[in-house]
Length: 76
Image (cartoon, rainbow, N blue to C red; front, side):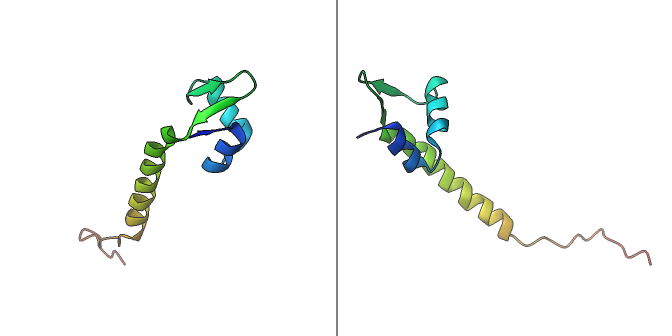
């Protein structure tokens, strides 16, 4: 399935200008049909999966209790 720049921006929750800049930097593969750029939607699946894994990892790290340090001494 192919998306336009506007549809891609909505799918990735970013701005159209950002998508256009990624296209100009050749970071997104596109097809130009003479009028508009068409972007293959499936190329983002791996990226979105990695983002989800990273969010889960960050949540686990933030929820991990801080261990009590046995070397801490009260010097009062």
